Image (cartoon, rainbow, N blue to C red; front, side, top):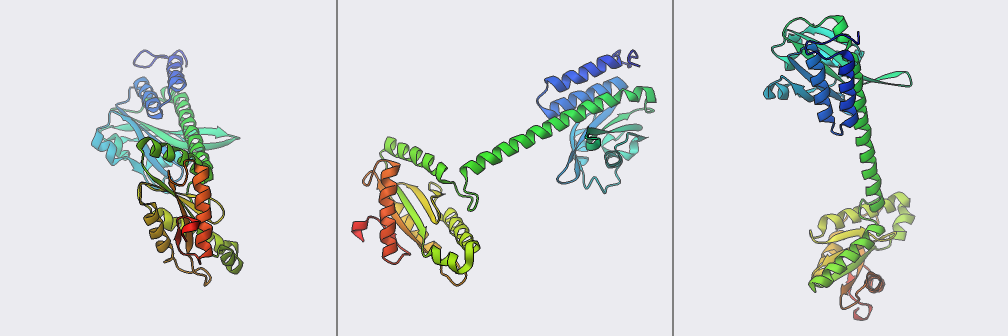
Length: 342
């Protein structure tokens, strides 16, 4: 059969070589699918063609590429909901993992085609067939004979490989992004972690120096945090941390940044001269949080300013930490600027 030619003069071997080249040299899935679908359509003399990819999470067949299909028709046939339950012929092909030749009227997206040939996109792993989508070709007349349709199998296989590779790359990218985000984010509160804070302080101090602008650093500590944990356990402590973090994140200005600093402490980086005002507003906001296991939630805050209190992150954090202790010693639920001022 490898010596047989299509209506366009391409042998099966040449068809397979062209399809393999499309997969090997392409890095955009839509472009690969369009080329592979076009090769299959050209080889078999199809009037139109469509390729769907199965969204594994939503169990829906999503239209990927077409040829010979009007845009508005493609939009109407953009997805097939619940592929495992739908009685749509394309869903049947994916579910049964077997090709199907049918009347073209059963495939709305192939409107105007008399007949259609559908084939699943399947990969095989450890003896298990995994359906990733489907391809369909529409014809003005009868579906080509079985011998001709056999040439579709290697194209469908290569298309499935292209889809699987794209999905694997996308998953790898998502995992890399997740791990990168995890390395910069505190998993409990979702706030930037200490590593990110250190970098942020360097950048903000450098910018403040270039622009000759003040900058405030405030450390917030949850008052009586140990009592909250002793009363309600670690779950209560985690709840308090999350609530305080959420309130801080939702209440700061757009120019401000909040990060988790240590066990029960958070840091505010506030550009401009109004850091103390911002810190006082945040302390007041947190005092409105509902009690946890009967324990009220409040924070103390110590604040230091660039350049008067220091010019490095270490200097400013040290001053802010001393001020925080002063605020706590005074009863908490307040802001202290410098120990000597309270």
